[in-house]
Image (cartoon, rainbow, N blue to C red; front, side, top):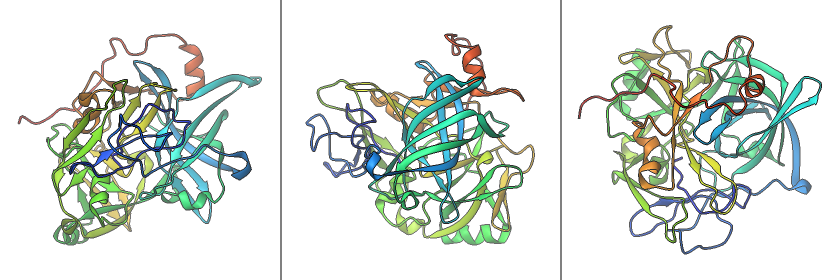
Length: 396
C-alpha cells in the first residue's frame, strides 16, 4: 500500500501509516506517537505496537532476505516471512528496521536481528515481528542474490489474523504466493482463453512507459472494492494520490503524485494466481530519516507484486500457477531507495528513473552468505563507481 510518511518518531514507537481526508487530498502518514502533531497533515489509521512480552509468542518460520548496499550503509532487506499456521502463510513487510549482526554467538555461528511490520492488505492494526536468523540456518539460495533462512519470531499472539495470504512449498525449495491479477472483464476473458498475463510497460506510477522491461502486475488484494484499494495499487479515480514528507521541517510538505487513473468499476474481475517468489521483483524502499529516533525503512506498495519480463514476453498460467519461460525473465540488481525528506525523493520510487538514490543487491557466489560477506567487507565503500544495468524509458 502506498503509505505516506511520516512523523519524526521511531519505528519502535506506536505505529505506522494511514490516510485521512484533507482538502480533497489523501495524505499517507507514517508512525505517530501522539494523537496529533501540527507538523502533519492528518491522523494515522494503521498502527503497529511494540511486542509486549506478556502478550506475545514465539514462532518458528522462514524469511527471504537480500543484502542491500546504500549510501548510508548495508543491511538485510526482508521480503517475505513464512509461518505454518493453519497451513503455510506468508507475511509481507510494510516497514522494517535496520538489521543488527552479532558474530560468533557460538564458534563460527553468527546472528542477525531486525523488526518487521506485517499485516493483511487492508488491516488498520499491523503486527510487529522481532525476527532473528542464524548463519547456520540457510536453507535456499536464489539466482538473484536472495537467500532463505530459518528464523525465530517473537510476535503478538494470534499471528494468523495478520497473515498477508497463503503460501505453498515448491519442489525447487522456493514458495508460491497466492496472489491476484485484478483487471476488467474483457481482459479477464482474454486471459482465461490464452492462459497468459501480458507484461505492462508502465512504471509503478503508471505515467511513463519503460523501454527495457515489462511487468506483470499482481496484488495481495483479492478484489478492488474501494478508492482506498485503488490507492493501495498506485491507482486513483482522480488520477493522483497525496503523500507527505518525513523531515525536520516545522510543517511537512505534501506530494500530489500523479498516478494511473482508474475506477473500481474498471477493476471488477479477479484471477487467483500462484506465483513463485523467485519471479518477483524486490519492491522499492523509502528511508525515513532519524528525526527524533532511529531511521527506518518503508516498503513502497507492499500490496503490489511485479514479475519482471523481457518486453513482449508473457507469464503463462499452468493449472493456476505462474510460469515464466527461461530467458524471458528481466531482473535488476538494484532498487530505488527514496528520500522522503524531500518531495522529489518521496516520488522517486514511483517514477523509477532515479539511478543515484538506489540500493544495490549483493550477488553471492555458490558458497557466500551475508554474514561472511559482511565480515570480509567491513568498512568498505560498496557504492562508489559501481556499474549496473538500469531501467530505461521510452521517449515522451
